[in-house]
Amino acid sequence: MKEVALRKGLWYMLVASFSFALTGACARYLRNDINPIQLVLFRNVIGVGFIFWSVYRKPIVQTGGKLGLLIFRGFIGTLALYTFFYGISKIGLAISITYQQSYPIFLSIMAAWWFGERLKIKEWAAVIIGFVGIFLIFIPSADTSSLLLRNHLIGVSNAVMTGLAYLSIRGLSAIYDQRSIILSFMLSGIILPIISLGLGECMQVQSLDFLINTVDPIKYSHIPVIVLLGVAALIGQLFLTKAFSYQKTGVIAAVGYSNIVFSILFGVILGDGLPDVYSFGGIGLIILCGVLISFGQRR
Image (cartoon, rainbow, N blue to C red):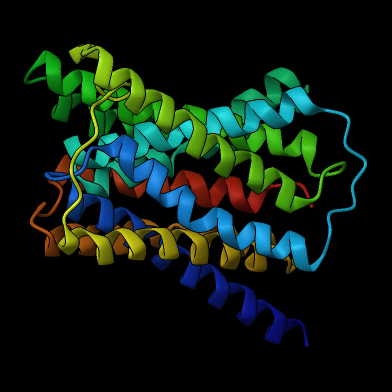
C-alpha cells in the first residue's frame, strides 16, 4: 500500500515538474513579444478563477490572524515571479529555472536564522555544495558585461524570494486554508502587475525594467500560448500539492528537480542551446544540494 502511495506521489511530482517547465517554456517562447510583467498578470488571471470556483463549491474555514504575513506571502511570491520570467527572457530557460530551484539553500539558512533551526553538518555541507553550484553558473556566465551580471543577479534573487515565500507559508499553513494562501499570491499577482504596467505607461526607468514596463500589444497568435502558460502553471500547482500529500516527502521533493531536466530540453527546442560545461557542473551540484536537503528534512 505504501509503495502504491509513493508511486502516486512520484507521478504527481513528475507531472508538476513538467507543467512548471512548460510554463517556463511558454514564457521563453513569448519573450520577444510580451514583457515578463504581463506574463505574470496573465498567469494569475487564468488561475484565480479556478480558486474562486473552488471556494464557491467549498467555503473556506480557517483560524486566520496573520493578515500581514499573508499579504507578505502574496507580495514576495509575485516579486519572485517577476524575476523568474525576467530571467527567462534574458538568461535562458534552463539557467533561470536552475537558479529558482536553488531556493532550498536560502530557505535552510533563513529557517536557521529566524526559527532557530539547527542545521546538521550534512545540511551545511549541502548548502556549501549548492553555493558552489551557483558560482559555477554565475561567475563564468556573468563576467563578460555589467548588463549580464545584473541579469544573473536578478536570476539569483528569484531563489532568495522563493525561499522567503516558502518560509512565510510555514507560518501560515496551520491557521489558513491552503486556498487562502494561494489566493493571496494570485491576487497580488494581478494587482502588482497592473500597477507596474500603469507606471510603465507614465514613466520609463531602464534599470527597473523588470519592475516597471509598458503594455505590449497582444496578437491572436499569442493567445493559445498565454492560455497554455496559465493552465500549465495551475496544473503544476495542483499536482505539486497532491504530491506532497503523501509521505516520504524527501523522495518526492528530490524528484521535483526533474524540472531542470525538462527545462533544458524545452530550452534546446526553443533555441537556447545546451548549457556549457561549467553550467552543467553547477546544475549538477545544485540538484545534489537540493536532494541532500530534501532527504534531510525533518518529518
